Length: 399
Image (cartoon, rainbow, N blue to C red; front, side, top):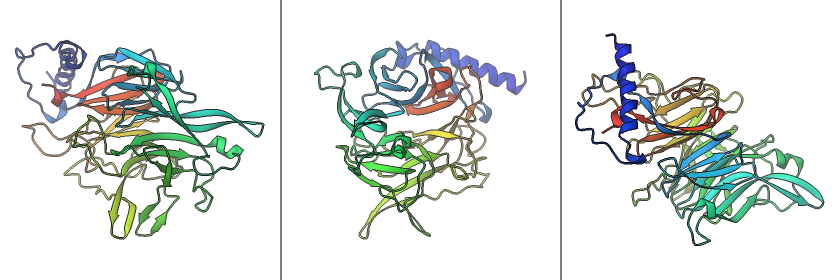
């Protein structure tokens, strides 16, 4: 039997085991009668697990909340939908122009979308951040949520009447820091570094009460840049569930961007504090050492149109990116090496590429994936074009 056939049968067998050994999704079958598989490098891969969460219109984001529920932003339906870990719906909430979601550690939902408003007799549709209180009614859950606050662009930084340009602004991504402050990525068409409020293409910081703090200014050896970001899309911080004293307090973030001519489309930005003040600094990551990996996060032109990113909250420090142009999921380790650590007993220590995808509707293919999340060894992908949420697990992570 050739190696490719062995691999195919192995993955099919693992998928069968997953549907039988439910864990998250019901009672767990005792797998003790099975032989422990012997992996070689070619057999390390992400395999789909059931059930698929389908019936969605166009899911643009997926997160695992600090309450450990699955939250989906269905941009097509303009609804946030909550599911338990078995994929059973727990509630919905409508948000106009819904484009992304996050949950802070107090369990409030933050949603980016749009808001219709009339100012001085003129109607505007403006980007907005909605804060949802899931517990105000006394019964916790999205179905009983109330809107606690709405932050509307551009009124967080100016009080003058908005212009047509303000209607062209979009909020693209949102994620929280451990202290409940958060970042929002903003896109627009006017990017002069001297304009009031800073360039439209920016990453903004808000505090835990939704008060605007600052646009992120990046310090490099060449100087400080308020116009550092070009069409930033997805953003992820280092604070990830579950709730724990060990949750990272790092103040930086990782982002992906799709600006014209942008060679480095994903980058880690560290927040540093010293006696001389605070600054945001790009984190250097080495590329090119093929004894450690075949591909790299900082490899020029590595992606087509990366739209979302997340980081694992466990000790793997894995980074996941979805690419809507290449219909693919990419995975890197914390050093920026593409791939996962080889399993025990493997022939080498080089990172093994586990990225996958391609255009289609099979369980390992995507159409315009828009969101990615990770929790407890499971990767979640918002497969927008197919109207579903897919879940994957590494073959080496099965008990």
